[in-house]
Each structure stands twice: as structure tokens, then as C-alpha cells.
Image 1 (cartoon, rainbow, N blue to C red):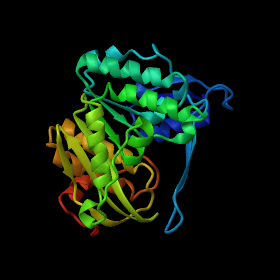
Image 2 (spheres, rainbow, N blue to C red):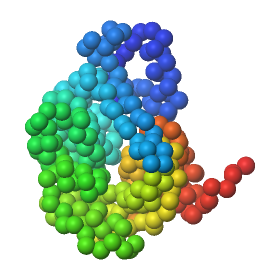
Image 3 (cartoon, one colour):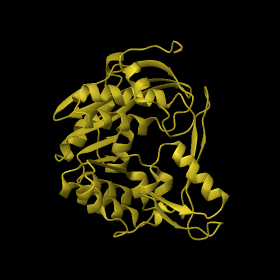
Amino acid sequence: MVTALADNQIGRLIEDLMRQGGVDLSWLRWVPYDGIGRSVRNGLNFTERGFGPRAAVGCSDRANSAASQMKVGDVNWDDLFVDRGVRWFHTGAIFSALSSTTSDVAEEAMRAARRSGAVVSYDVNVRASLWGDAAGNARAVDVNRLLISLSDVVFGNEKNFVEALGIDVPRAQSSDEASWASGDVAALGAVASAFPNLRVIASTVRTIHSASRNDWGGVCWADGVVISSDVMPSLEILDRVGGGDAFAAGLIFGLLEGMPADEALRYGVAHGAVAMSTPGDSSMATLEEVRRLVDGGSARMVR
């Protein structure tokens, strides 16, 4: 993680907030900050949560952020993957879109992780506004196809796979309840065919009744087998931002723990559901809360 350093009360507040979130500050790379952000600053993400018929709206304010200025050679990846034994590296299309250098940094890290035997995962979470200019979509496809070719595990959904990879996904014909994830299942197959290097491809699945009520679940392709989770019907949502990241984190946790893909998928779905019950895009869920939901627990008060 790279962040701008402010030698004042704001800088200390940022440190305190990161500590409260469980971030190990020894892994941070600090860069000087001038107090106003002329050259470097910490990025922001503004979100209007949405409710009922009013959709959530997000605005990524990431220009000149410290992470956007990372360059090849800034990080000793061998120290992480070889000396410290990091087993999993995760990045995605948002970081790759931040500047003209960040996709090169992602590629550098992914190649180093693969050399060490670490698992590499990539989230095709494309945000059109981050790619910017008229050539943005073409560049997004080029960058994402390269980086997915270096991955073992990929996260995304039908829309992102089509837009970010230029993959033609056949449209599902059936509209019955059993086929609610059929478009995403077809997308997983298309991605698996295009990228034989992949071992797992996973997608969240939603049916949006309103901004605050979604059917929620997930599907994944693992070593040639497609697995679907149970559907959480009419899941009540406080803040959907971060649900996809929480889904990825839960599934990664399961795979790192040696769970079969279907069980890891349940952890991804459960973690995403719990994360969307709290404000903000960082999960505040404990492992006990997620396990309780995986095991079929209710929202009955715990005393």
C-alpha cells in the first residue's frame, strides 16, 4: 500500500484510522505530502448509497493519488514472495487504470508472484470513468487481457467480462427462476475458453429489485466444473459498495484454507452479504459472523 504522508494532525488521523481497520503500517510505503495535493495525495471514493428506487452512485476521486504514481522498480517483490513467503497476490482493473504506469506495476508484481509459486488473482472491476479518454475502452481490453493471462483466479461478472475483455457472451434464452445466473455462467465458460491458464473464475450474481433489496448469490468455474451458491432472496442492503471485494476476500480465504470450491464460494457469498449490511467499502465482519451465516444462522440478536 502506498499513501501520502502528512506530518500533521491529518497524517496522524489517517494512521489511527488504518490501525483501527487492522492494517499493519509496517507494509506502508510513505511518500511526502505538501498539505494540498499539488503533486500527490490520498485518493477518495465518494458514494451515495441509494435506497429503494434511487440507485447508488459512486465517484472515484483518484487523480494524483499516491498509488497512481507507483512505477516499476518501486517495490522489492522478491522480498515479499520469496523472503517473506506471501502466498497470494490480488490486484485488479481499478489499480491498473489509475495512471499510465500502474498496469506495468501490476504486471511486474504478477510475474514475480508467479515465479515464486504464489497464487495470482485479478478483479475485472472496470470503471469506465477511470480509463478516461476516447481510447479508454480499447486500452482497458488490452491491459486486462494481458493481466488475466498472468492470473490463476479471476473475479468479475457478465458485464465486466464483456466490456473489459471484449468477449462475446451468448445471451441466455430462458427467464425462469432456475436460470437467474445463466448469463454469468455463460460468461464464465467464455472466459475459461479464452484463458486456459485460469483455475478459478468467480462472479457475484444479483437480481436488483431496488437499491436496498437484491437477490444475492454467486457462481464459479473451478477446474472445468461450474458451481452455483444458494440464492439469498431479497437481501436487505445498507451499502452495496464493497460487496464484490468482500465476496472475493471470502472466496480467497476459503481457497487459502484448502476448502473445496463450493465451500469457498459460500464464504464469498456470506462475506459479501455481511459487508453490505454495514456502511463503507471495508468489511467490518468477523470470521465468526461469516461462519454463522454460512452455517445458516439468522439475524436473531446475539447476546
